[in-house]
Each structure stands twice: as structure tokens, then as C-alpha cells.
Length: 191
Length: 82
Image 1 (cartoon, rainbow over the protein chains, first blue to last red):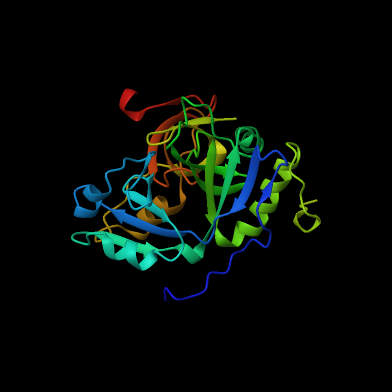
Image 2 (image 1 turned 90 degrees about the horizontal axis):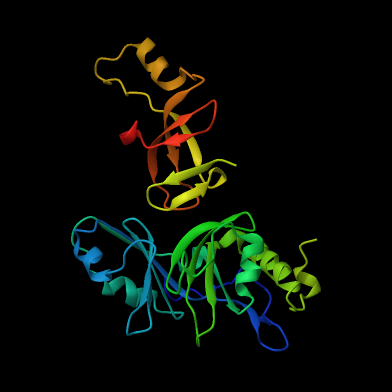
């Protein structure tokens, strides 16, 4: 099953402003593994992340405490089997590779907070959602999981949703970015 | 806008949640009569005042929780502090 070619719901390549200050790119091919476990299980103790927070593991995996008793592991494409096998499965634990079922985008740059504020009802201030924060909410009226994962000292968000909403959400995000200088291809218009 | 305090996510717009209705004690399935099942499934008090409700945090933690809400004013309080 892990040899399946990944088919992204997004047809567009990365979009960015000429000065590189804002970018929107498809990251749907990233490996996504969902873990549900009680905190007193070996898997719960192994992940060491509380609800609402995330941390980078040395192997590059981003471990997100996405809900109480639930974690999402994000990593480079093609690592699903490896991540699933790496988790202790003693006790009442569920580990599912959801790579093909979720779309994911990365929104980066100083203006990313302005873009997201247009379409998301979460307080994006640093004291509420600092770097590493994991939260869920409505983005362009689609329920999404978000991770603030700053890069190179710049603000950056990973936004994931059900795969079937991916094409629409990418177009809606691109539309929100237009005000900040991103040139939206005609095929992505939501109007 | 109604702001509902989710115990896991904090204050959220009620559009992020779903009102699952009044809390109604579940009858014993071994002994409940048809009338009791009907009451449990369909009949609600719906008072103009304080009511204990279950809400579902559908956009956040996806957990059910209980609050008390005044249906006349939409004031909300913790059931433990009533």
C-alpha cells in the first residue's frame, strides 16, 4: 500500500510574491500518520507532546498534539511505513497512515498572518498561537488542522484538511493571498 | 455570536461547535418502557432559563462536554459552579 503514487488534489505549483515575502505551496505529499492512544500507553509516553503543541524529532518528523489523546506525525514523503512501525503498539493504540486522505499546504512569510486572519477565526497573535502551536478551526469555511511551524525565523503555517476539500482550499487561500501581491493563476480563481 | 468555553480549546465561537441538546438521563435499557425511551430520545423541556446542555467541539478537539446555558440570555456557566 505504501508504493501507491501520491496524487495531489492541487494542480498548481508553488505561488509566491516577487520579493519572496509570502508563499503558498502544496505539501500534500508529506507523510501523515494519525495516532490515537491513551496517555498511559507506551505510544502516548513515546510521543511526549501535549495537546496544542508540537515538536520536531531528530529524524525530521514533526509530532503534533492535534487533539486530546491524538497525535499527527508529519514527515517527508514516503516515510509512512517507517513511522507506523516506529511506534510502540502495546495497549489501546490506533496508528493509521492518512497520507492519501489529507491535503496539506504551507503558508509562509511575514504576511501569512494577514492572509490567515482573513479566512480563519482563530486568534493568531503570538501569545495565543506561538511557534509550535497546534490548533484546529475553520479556514475559508473548511475545518482544518493548523500547525505554526516557523522556518528560518519567519512565520509559517501548515494547514491540512480532508483531501476532497484540498483543491478548493488551495484556491481560496491563493485568493486570500492576492491582496498581498501573489499573482493567482486563472485556473485557481474561486470567483 | 455566542462564545462557548470548550474545556480543551478555550473560548470558541459557537459556529465551531454543535449543540447536542439538553442533558437527559439515559434509562436502563433492560427495564425502560417504550414511553421512557420516547421521552429519552425525543422529548425535551426546552425552558426559557438555565438548562444543562451537551456541546460537541467539531472544529477543535472533537470532544463532547457539558455546560449550563441560559436560553433566554445565552449566558453560560460551568455546571460545577452553578
